[in-house]
Amino acid sequence: MSNNFYKYHALGNDYIVIDPNKTEIDLTEEAIKIICHRNLGIGSDGILFGPIFEEDNINLKILNPDGSEAEKSGNGIRIFSKYLVDQNYVENKKFKLQTLGGEVAVEVLDDTGNLIKVDMGTVTFQSDLIPVQGETRDVVNENLEVNGEDFKVTCLSIGNPHCVIPRSEISKQLALDLGPYVENHEMFPNRINMQILKVIDKNNIEIEIYERGAGYTLASGSSSCAAANAAYKLGLVDRNITVHMPGGEIEVEIKEDGHVYMTGGVSSVAKGDFTSDMWLEIRG
Image (tube, rainbow, N blue to C red; front, side, top):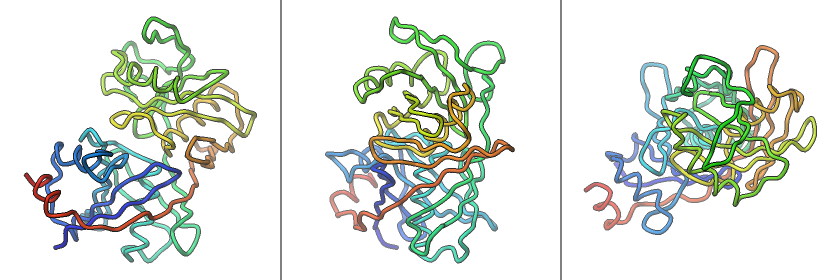
């Protein structure tokens, strides 16, 4: 066994891949926090722990910088898929991954694994499935009071929970101001990811993102899919949408059967070894 790690980014959303088949480590909450810390550790938006093989399934754990496990991450899934290609774990260009948020189908669109399409499954706006407090209903264009101000929000789950806030103007500062309050709002018992949405036209939207357990984020695949679906539900866009984020663009396609497909790029950053000092600290 080694003690190495791999780092990738998708549109500025960076993840560390730790492969349990190569590196033996107990990823405690404290170890995850240290590894992901931008000053004390390697620094990342999370850790992708896998592949974990169970029968014919390839399982992936997506770990947030605060030590919690995320149900699903579009960028994380694409990054992990490229890792599988790079390490020759998969031979076919189409395969499936198991996440806490369910099964996802992946298609590698080039020979290097740099361009990847993911079937993110279907979305639900139903409150008890997101979850959102209150009577069972579709949470579409509802009022939500955030820090003394009322906002119109549309909430949904695509395997993980999202709260989308349409605005005529958006900014990083607005995401930073609202994000902590929305993420931890009493209406969301499992906390929630937030996207501030600006519609450019029928095929283009712009978003700023504040992720549950990670904070302000340059790009997010699941957030892109959530914002696109919320905009489509509100009648603001068509089925094919380019999502513009500070980190770059993702293509989202909403099929008639409700399945949501996301296509975007992935790049490798580095491969390294934990130093003896770091290894001792994260292993306790």
